[in-house]
Image 1: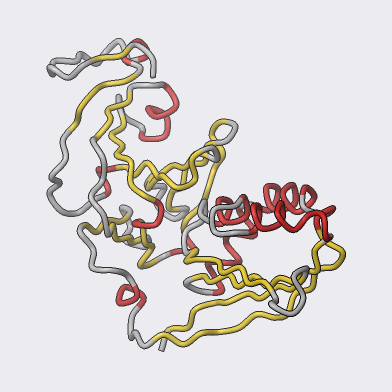
Image 2: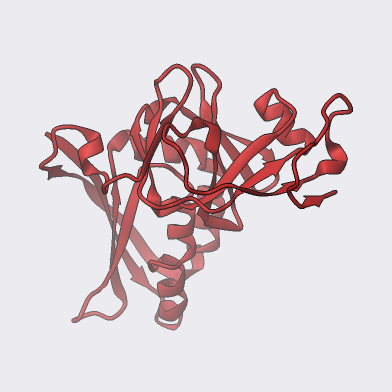
Length: 245
């Protein structure tokens, strides 16, 4: 039986900071935005004590304890910075404990909504499922994408982070901040790039569509950074072209 990882925290909030606390710790707040940047995060529930309006509980759910550990390791700097920003909001905060929530699923993939697509890395260690249709495919010729892929271009499609589900190899996913605010995730065993994510838009991932197994309904819609293409690569398609972004 698979078990979810659940973390409970108690907060006693400064009376004048209750509204700001709920903004930062609520389901649309900065903490949830940070959690969503990691694979394996499910959701957060913010509870307010009916008898004491200055007392709050947060319940964070993750697919596994490994997913939570991987998040803390990959985003330790961002976690510490956000934690420091929130220091003045509370009188006291306490970790109430870490819990397991049993799930009646025999395999991790059974916890995932019916997938529209599946994908994975070259060695097969990392697997994922998409429960929503990706957006239009973007063809990118920028130097950074070329170096990440080892080819003359990269093909990416946006997909909602909530629709991206890691079904295998979460411990193999490694993140690299290739530019400020953007992390690229890849399999640390075989090096296959899987997706990228921007801090400014954590709710959207850009999946490398070459890692998707099934035929796609979407098609390429435009080429970007064509001014940075390799001099040995000619573009012969009729897609709209943009010299930069």
